[in-house]
Image (cartoon, rainbow, N blue to C red):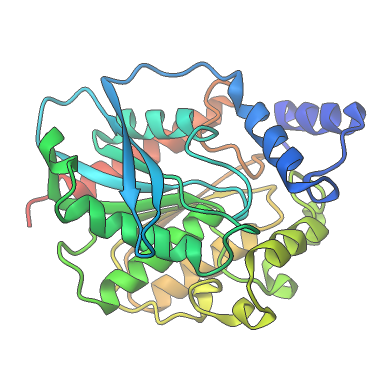
Length: 313
């Protein structure tokens, strides 16, 4: 199927603008451009948001934003890790996505502003993602806001989906309690090996091969990090992970990474539900204002989370 006409116009307009791709710009400029893409989106109404500070293992604090849906009390919790190649993006760029997810799932969503490369290289983002889970469920103020900390999931898109899966692996290995009930992975990055993790048929459709290499150079502390299972989660032992939802975009050059991860999870005995959206491009999730089909993806994600988090232990 060809690229969705609306998506194609976005790509054509971007090329006509003459603006260089992110990897050809200084990192601060690339970040500003990334944030600007989402700044004009209308913010869906949500019952309440709460700004939080999340302590990390090295004594620093990172931002968190808790989204509370229109459910009076005892809502479950989903931690969300934004995309952006471990380099771009923030809880602000993904504000619309996390509002929509809280509303569609009936879950409180804690969006985590993990530290990014190149200022903070691997494994800082992974550690921040893990620390946020521990803090949120163990002695933070989140439980005082009507959130049931016994029903917890992790979620993320692109690099954030990578972090969510790495957190799930860590939680299993550490016998973390409460056990995670679900992981929602939206076009997740799962391998640094672009020989298997990149579809050349869609080169330049939102992402370029050289751009992904740029992200890796700015994220890895060493070339050896590429094979670390906290980066290339396809290298991890995936047995015993929580049931998983994988959302893919047909015209996404890194779709193979999500497909391979879904297959590997299923081969490891994990219950996986995967859905691919025809004609869609990387980054479509949460763009309901632009793509009607994105609404279906958000509803699917919300239903999957609600089913997993709504069950009693």
